[in-house]
Length: 235
Image 1 (tube, rainbow, N blue to C red):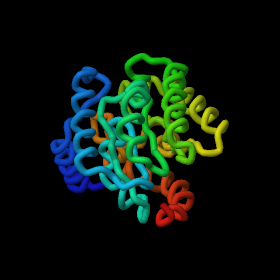
Image 2 (image 1 turned 90 degrees about the horizontal axis):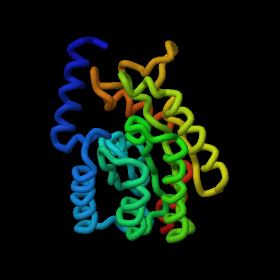
Image 3 (image 1 turned 90 degrees about the vertical axis):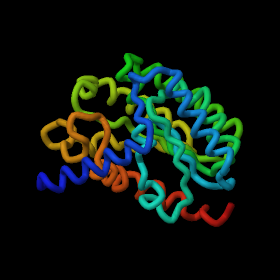
């Protein structure tokens, strides 16, 4: 990629981040919950109509700004919260950002902050079970799409074995229920050299450039759009 184009993409991405508070696993729980309260207030002020699709997750989900276009013509609402972990999604997000709005489906991205902060894959799985248990109890017809963990470069990639184990556990769990589907977005972001694709990530950062989200679209859209399109006007 030409240097000038790369710089333009980085500046554009930085502008997007500047409009949102960027939180990671290093951010305090108080800051994460403050952002959650802000997102929740916005959702309650302008609630999504029942029957849509709600996205929950950490910063990789929060910064998926093109999700509505990438998953068109589906009706999608993105309530991603940077810095969050699976336990927060299970304890707060699914109960207050999903269930009250009666979505027909939820797209979930969590796990990377958990693993980087020292959680074991089995802990992520335990919290995931709590999350989907609450969702299914409240909305038994809702479908749940679970994204694999982003293989961010740098120190985070040193835990790639734990990330892959987390994916394995989540995938196996999703396979136990017909209304859950695991989507592997991890391996498509890794190059032939076994390292994260440099063109997909902001240099020196854990977050993705537009090229990274283009990979997401190429993997996620072919799964979710055909599955959900028949329900788009049936709610």
